[in-house]
Length: 182
Image 1 (tube, rainbow, N blue to C red):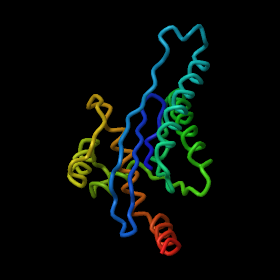
Image 2: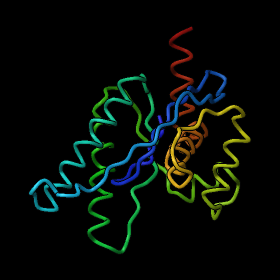
Image 3: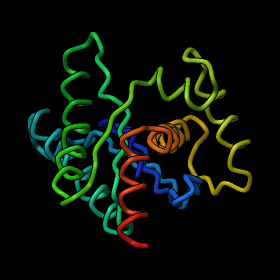
Image 4: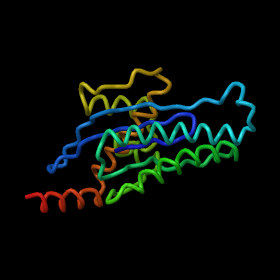
């Protein structure tokens, strides 16, 4: 399972990695939260907790649909604005904690540059380059029905799945599962 965690925009992706290390995307999802217009009479940080609950509920709903052995995360980015950093870290940490609570699951994380390099061969690739490379790699890919500006998040989650499929620790896990199921 791939996760592009955030606070306002998130992407989730489920993919199947076969014993011969062929990756097949199963589902890509965009999720997002918005500030409460009225903030429900709450302080801003209280509204942040409401939004974190939305993230938790949507992530739990997604992971309950799939039985994942590996959770691949895009690294939590650092930004200069401390308020933005806090919010992104809340979303990232919430998803990460939920994923790591699943017994026996391997959790890996990759920098945005690593994801770009694995998918396109260029660690400075644009979001559009990543999307184009993933569409070419997986013809017939079912994309979420969201605005083009929001597609980058489920595509980043799928890029995390691709990176995990090429990760030596994930390959070792597949080899163990293959041996024990034979």
